[in-house]
Image 1 (cartoon, rainbow, N blue to C red):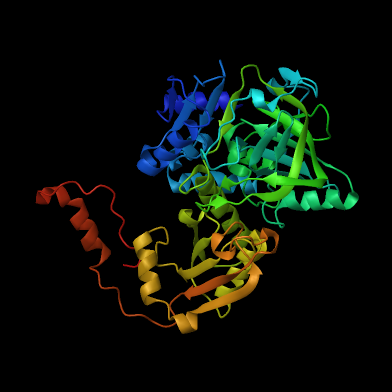
Image 2 (cartoon, rainbow, N blue to C red; image 1 turned 90 degrees about the horizontal axis):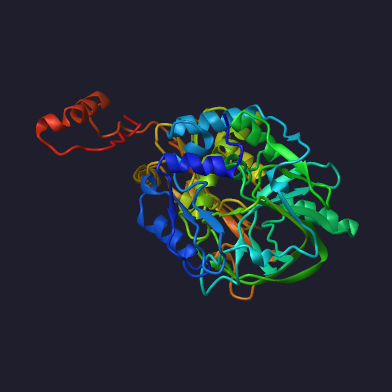
Length: 482
């Protein structure tokens, strides 16, 4: 059975050794963020775990969890309830994309256990951390935002940072103007009306995994397909939106389409601090929540992080599905977004090249799907290469690319958002532009044979390794091209 809420998922993480509760008192503004960051910097992926804090200075009874959605592939597999191998994860995600299950309405749910109207609501009552002490502008939520297109009624769910500015006010950053949330905001602004929006904190993990990807359909329907059961929704109290019934906290309100205020600085997924800018303001009208709610925060900012791990697993597969199924581009072997770039700066694709223009068709399919603000490096190579192996990627760039022939540039176009190399000090981020580099790293003619023994000889050596009196090898990745 799929997880009904965050709490049942946390229980599963704990049973699997993937969650550690910290009972020592911690300061939400100086300790929670650094503890999570050290875990990502110091531990290899397979050793990471989620963090739970239940003794927070100044917030008796308050609980915060972080790193519990995507600290590792093993954790993502736990969220998806499958084996922790890439093939199983991708199969689960692919099936969910191909077979979405529409969310269903229910009369009420745990998120309605406490209802605080305009006179009682207080965002400052929750232990919302400062994630980068002394550098972030203040406490930030890293929640799911729900908005609707006023023309079509189509819902969008995205993970967007939210600076806490007071008891009933947050900032909101929609990202690039081609993101659905930004498109919704522009349409409401055209109408001269505030945009209804709901902030959701702490839900079934599959909803968080589905939220950042560009499926072209309702992310909650994709989440339903992945988990094999429809997400249950309840109506908001004060606005015309629906929210997950088992969420820990729901903040209902409106985004003012006429008012801009300073938001930030905040540490971004690029690994650099994003400067303060004038951005929209969200006003809370009602907060509903569970009794003794658990506040979930994603570990984002400097990679590797949860945000890059989520994109790596969900974005890659949604893009591969779009290219091969929706656009009918043949020969795609693998799609890999590099985590050091937050999975939005460098993209590798391996294909069995079949005709003139195949590489171009693939690249324009990517940009058409993701939007021009994604990816400034796109490398396409042959299907005999494991593009998930960093050494093999370097090998390909060394020996299958002639720079003057195989590199092309799309100049003066949309930049990867918050790319510091495209934004000199004082530059208006709304007008930032950049260049994309397209590298055709496929073989243009028959290459000599690879200078390695045949695979069966290497596999025999691996199988007999300890018989030779040598220390165990661990995981061995033999090149595909032998």
